[in-house]
Length: 123
Image (cartoon, rainbow, N blue to C red; front, side, top):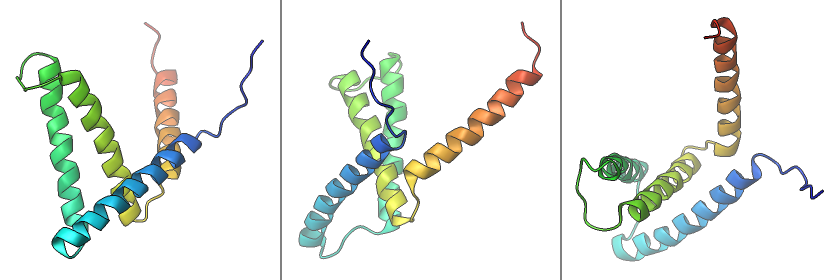
């Protein structure tokens, strides 16, 4: 029987966080050369909200209620990944440990949902 060792639940998020910040550092180099400064926190937040809103349109396109040019599935994958990237970038600027916050939040939500399920009658 092939058994894989238990992997630290946060390790994938930690690696994603590190990669996101590496890419952000490259953007900052370009911003510095082009703008003479790097994006402010509000500019970063606006970039995130713009991409997140576009995910909504892509979902509509995937449901065939909104037309877009190009491959909807490929664009949806790209924008969802980009939104995740923005979360890591914003969290870094706001000093939020996303892997820790994610784990704590999922634990809290999961416990609350479990209590709700236990209090509901079986159907």
